[in-house]
Length: 129
Image 1 (tube, one colour):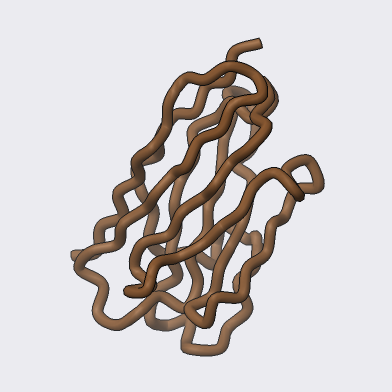
Image 2 (cartoon, helix red, strand yellow; image 1 turned 120 degrees about the vertical axis):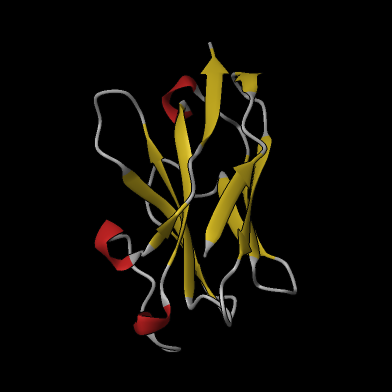
């Protein structure tokens, strides 16, 4: 059974930084795509960043470009989201997601929630003004 476990969420002040981590277990092989999503109360879940097994990464919302960076470790089963210059607008529950084996080894890592088969439970990030 595949599990994704996020960690690193916390309460910080505006301008602060956090590093989220997501560890995948039980996955046979390596996910083609892993991504971070976030959801604030009353808002839709939005994609924040994705990374391929080859290391290619994409940050999606303009609001976080230049501030957030996604990376992975050498095992390619742990991904991180480095978040800098945080603002109250970044307050959300942050989820990690991974594509399933059916996505293949060369599929594009998009922002579409439907692309991702496995999800973590989320880690809360709260930024105080």
